Image (cartoon, rainbow, N blue to C red; front, side, top):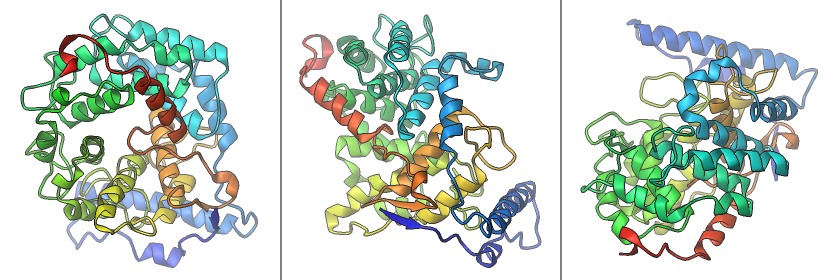
Length: 405
């Protein structure tokens, strides 16, 4: 473990300001406002360091309390996510696991019971009990059950019906719709392959043409779009790359173009990542962009190019997350001025984990800022991923339906 107490000098940060080239736009005005807010945070930190040299600090106890309370009670502001309740479970459970918190058995049983009500007769999971099966909700539910990790949680997944559901939403070109009759995009391919590989139901017939369809989503910029011909986006890029790594088909993409696009998404002044070209920094992309790097390293290593250190600036990313994305009351956020929420808490902590864990541990600030490592393919901790993979592989493949060829 190494501790890096050095922050970027303020003078260097000032050199990184956005240049409008005397042609201001609404987007450039927004960028400048964000830079000013971030710079103020960094300047305040440098002043506080004279008195508290251990800063910046990850407010672990505050975040733990915020998340633990959210398991049983959410404010009315989350009503709009009624069709995303398995996601709420996943965001909370994964965040707690990164902070090293285990739920007690009673709470685990309660979550398993709820998620079991979300699995429909067709094998997919809905956004809540009685809701239409949706691939994104299915991904979140399976990940949540894997994080819970109990025999009851893992056994609650009806693998045969789940596999049938994946075949039902698979398209002839190898892509996947998000639900029966729903939209097709690269998220579907990743969610389908992720749950299939985790639960041991990934079979060749399910994969026919999928890798080639995903590769067709890589854009001229180097990133991946949600659908062929669209704009490259951080979340889609992660989904495309992770899906190809699961398929062992990463060699089909333009690795150098993707690497160039990824490194250019890290903001020079802020230190965090943006999701698309000419967009604002956002804490959640610390994982959607940052989490793609370990996956890309596995492809580079085939040619003996395994990098000795992160290719992005992990110190700057940790600085942005710790200084600009924490609520003093617990929970993390997009950027200064935004409200805390469970989604950003999950993905900022995930990005912090990626930045800290690579060929050892590198932590900005005190060693108390360390979080658990995350498995970049699934974004759950490696021990839980391994436990699930071993459990489901011991069961073998389902025995009937379209799944045996």
